[in-house]
Image (cartoon, rainbow, N blue to C red; front, side):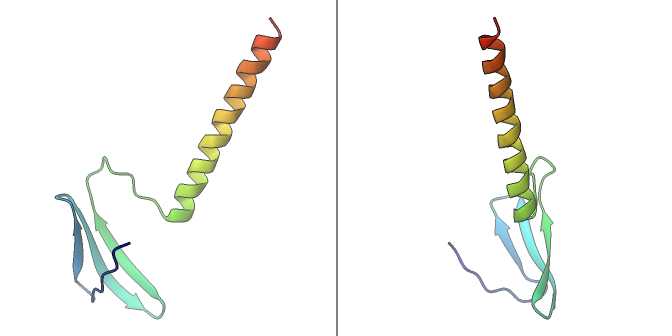
Length: 73
């Protein structure tokens, strides 16, 4: 893991097209801005993990249905 220290209004560049900028610091919270192409999905980590879990559940249901259909032939 790369750890960088940034001050307000400073940024981090990822590749050619993603910039992460520190907008404000209030107590123990930091507000960041992310400038990236629309083709890049950006989610909070807890939302990303929830999406992954829902996708896995949907895939398992589909596999279960396929198995049930095969058994009923």
